[in-house]
Image 1 (cartoon, rainbow, N blue to C red):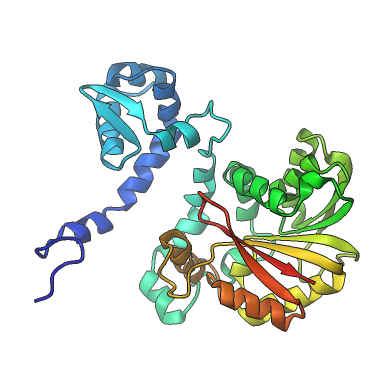
Image 2: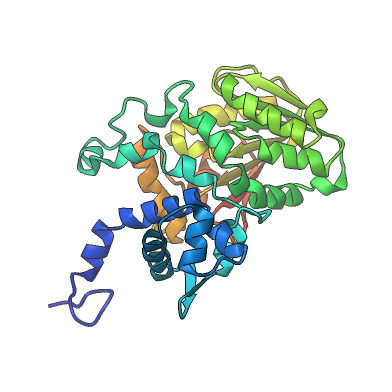
Length: 339
């Protein structure tokens, strides 16, 4: 008999923990809604003090905090609780890198419900819900725009630096599926000579416009409402941002869009594609590789593509070459393709 990959002796623990994994999600979601991490960051370290700050029962807080210690979001010393470095950085509302808003999108029924009948999804080979999240003007993308911007702040800074935004060269930038607008807005903030043209559904672009105005770049942030496959992009773009979008479609559909992008791009332009890019084995790194399952459940034909697959798509669409950039410590990778 072969041994379990998790222990020397076969054990049901992994089976039990995996079927109960929804409890991890709900515990973290509840802690964020209670503002528990901020309370501890403020110095409320006992169950009694945290309960008073969060307006919750002491028993409930004690059990939740102990569970959060078990799943490594908190540390416990005697009867006092402390934040881990990750929790202090990303889950304390006072942190500039706070990401708690992302749970609204990541745990929204529109996404979670897609996984209810996984056997059915696998039998079909795609979402059971019509066009899934790709339904025209699906309301989930407004929630995405409002909830996910903090999660994208770091990769946006890295992308802008790789694209040379701080050099201040005049640039016409096309931001496709702009969502919250963070990627284009970050370039505009770093480069006073950059002008952004954001493409997305009208309601989503309202969020991007609000964010651009708050960032002080509203005068250089323009919108092109509608489907990226249908609207007129215009021409002469020096940079095209293609962030977290191609994974929703099959390669022929991606190539159709890439040909349209190339026609709108200036000679020598660069396309910056931010994606979950698994290695060729398609099982590592874990976060990027596991993203394929999300696409299986929530789209008709989407996937997490390897760099070789992206490279071939861009080549087929007429781009000269592509290169891969790591964006540590996050799971995303950046593909830069040249016109």
